[in-house]
Image 1 (cartoon, rainbow, N blue to C red):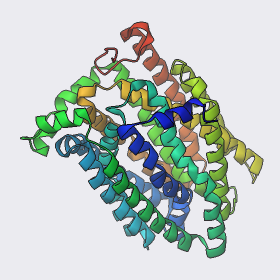
Image 2: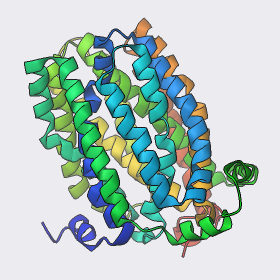
Image 3: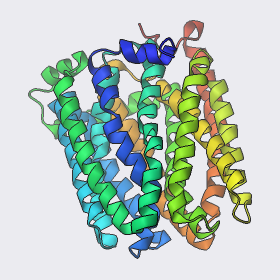
Length: 427
């Protein structure tokens, strides 16, 4: 097993990549423990489907602002400092608010503060990839995903706690655990990362510029994005995955507990199945997929996602085998699409402007996706299957974006190499 390529890459990691990957379980485990129960926790405290969707859309509005500021803040403060400051603000503080939440307003305030994770997502992504060898990106992102799925070995504990102590007290305890583990992660990672070479360059270049002065430069960055077809197609897929993952994450637990009648305490078992299957999938399938041209695994992933949604909306009663089949197909398909999309994003961005381009891409993604939280919540109040019908339509549109991305990559890149945002082959 130690000879497996993924294990070799994990052992061989150095510098910022090692610090980012090795500490990620301290964030991924608690997040994946409480995530399956978030929506029904909100229902238990008196929120409606439409209020849950409204919070998601309002939070997305705040993310537009924080995402827009993220690139400028990251360049001005540096990748390392920005990550520590905004990790603490956007995750540690909301976890405490969620732990004591009483009504709609608690969740709204926590969501607004949590929206600042868009800033740290930009800075953390730069820390992760800027000094990394592009050849190891698939392995790096694989381990980032795997670290979250380690929660599979702890998820049954959450189900037992829900069964013994009921949902609300258990969720309050899980949020307090998340606060402690995530806060530890932020300080430990900060101690072992160094500012990237590009980060040092941007620190010098922006030394005498204010944040708002840097924001004015986004006009040229936006024009560069709009003139780069392969980046625009990547943006299209980012939007689709953002909306569909948001819908599935928020409304799946509501659908299966309220309509299909799965007991609340069993939700963690589906998380366990999902995580175990994905751990196997990463070690068996991903090393074989990474040599393929991205369009084929992404097309296969989209087909799997559509099949999964069809299984879900066709269920007329409680069937654990069908739900397990859905979870397996959906999990493997989401990861297949997402991991190649992560690599596409890194390789289609100009490395000299990575922070601002990535920040602006995420802002554009959120702007387009933000109304869909409210839309999905409204659809769910009409019929709890409708959000997943919407997912099917969006996944179908994904075929077009993958086709265009493959076409533009072939047109602009010699020998099939991945292009940068300027259409040049990276060194």
